[in-house]
Image (spheres, rainbow, N blue to C red):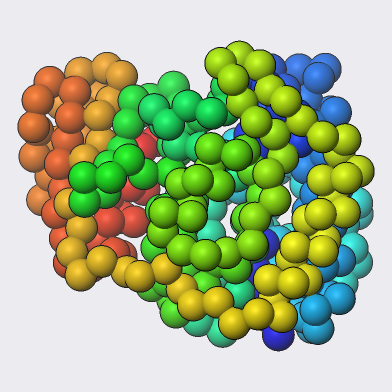
Length: 264
């Protein structure tokens, strides 16, 4: 069994402000260590379920947060972003059996996490796909589905849990509950234990990929109107209003490429 793990940081246990995600901040070290712990818990769960090949994709910020020397020596790690349209899912293909998402978070405008955002928090106000507010989970679950691979487990804030449950039944571990700038969280060791067991249970159950729409109507609302103006020149895109760009396609590869060029 071949398992792909994509790891972010804004959904790890107890995180509550942007400084904790920034490698230049002293508090970042605490949450980088929690990111390692939760990824390692997922790895252990995968191998306990019978996985024989596990790939970890560092998917936060510069994607240079995880240290391979601090992970289980049986895994391979994908570090740094390379502008590939698969983004946080780069390295995934149809040979994998399952995807696990660690440290994911609510999308922009969803609330429930002080760090809720979608893709570029300083650039993007909101993204919708077919009229629905999109999260990084939804974008990445569609990427996995396009390869025929199911997302079987995720961890992150409780708001993301509700968002995922509206689309598919998967195993989920809530890492904290957000209220404005505050978070309510359990002890990180309890979270790691739950992740390990949850990943194991998820991989032992048959879970289907999320349904992939036949067509995609994507809209990105930017914080600055000049960004929207520039990105509206992307082939096939159009400006809906001063801050919003629309793009339509029947092919999700086109959507991923649109995101790669317009969300940086």
